[in-house]
Image 1 (tube, helix red, strand yellow):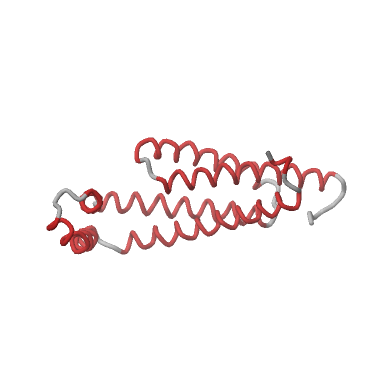
Image 2 (tube, rainbow, N blue to C red; image 1 turned 120 degrees about the vertical axis):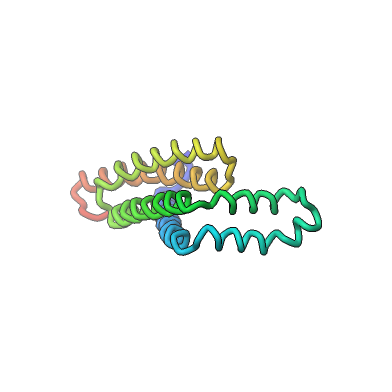
Length: 167
């Protein structure tokens, strides 16, 4: 499939995908910090305020009931686990993105391995939750791995020919 696209386009897609992963990592860091700042009582109060009218009209409203269900599940333990996951994932991805953008060769195989492990976990999560967000992130990770592999081979070839930097 990549053979049908020009080298320049593939390399631009790689850069774009890495930047998108970096933005996603920043979003995870911010989300993890935000989760730590809200209490379970606050989450329940917001969910109640958002769903009160709808549940009065239709006590079986799917979205309102799901929101209330998730708010009820938001315990201090869940809060800490979710924040730890988001912050640690964000830090790891940020570190890998920096390595890829600086074209550190060691960061390419490490990134592919770590993203592969995330794909396995995200696939498991998708089977449990059927979250389209998780599916979207997983598809992006697969694309990033394919583009990273291509870029890694390209850089190794360029460097073996005596060039220090790729164009």
